[in-house]
Length: 305
Image (cartoon, rainbow, N blue to C red; front, side):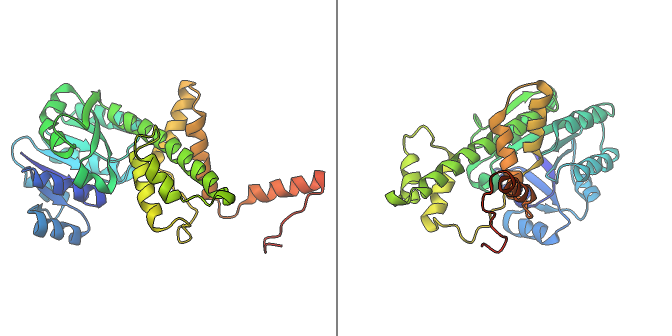
């Protein structure tokens, strides 16, 4: 089997490597020629000088997997790619695209006889070694064609991947997955902050997180990663208190509003990330001013006095 991988960043490059190691031929393109050359040298990938060149190096039913930033970049690439393909060819969007965009793109491609799969992909930088969790949306026909690829990328042929429904459902499932992830991370961070704050007990957070990893109800891969990081540094002084948020966390909260489903944990977890991104802290300054105005409470100056 052979496919083109467009976008060879941390995720796309590692996915290309895993596919090559499983015996699937990969034609790869990225604007970063160093990334292309490294995969050619180390893993035997077939280099392409452009998207058009990558398509030209495929035979038979052509399969093109996109691992690009969501939004305009991915949508423009699909629009550019479609005229290069024939009826029966397949495009896979493995990025974190909005599921509504995937539904629209899938319908547009279907009118041209081109198959489409939206692949929600989880596993991060560890996916090449451990395998990826793949939540895919497609027609049954497209899903069947892609099975060998999904089985190669997943942790095992019989687990870690699923055709969850029609076009759009893969990215929708991944969106909700990321919303849940926000809530889990926030709960873990708050709990560990409380443990750290109990100075009289002099608790060892590395010891406790390692303890929880074994038979505890809260054991998880997130806890594994946290325990490993705390072994080296419990103070985290070199880590900036800034947490980025992906589009999927926001889209999950919007979906909850649209469905009229209460999702307070997911919503608050997202809002806490916004709080960490607030450089000027104006709302907190306003709160301090109000508290002083009605209660005469001390206002701490920006200089710390």
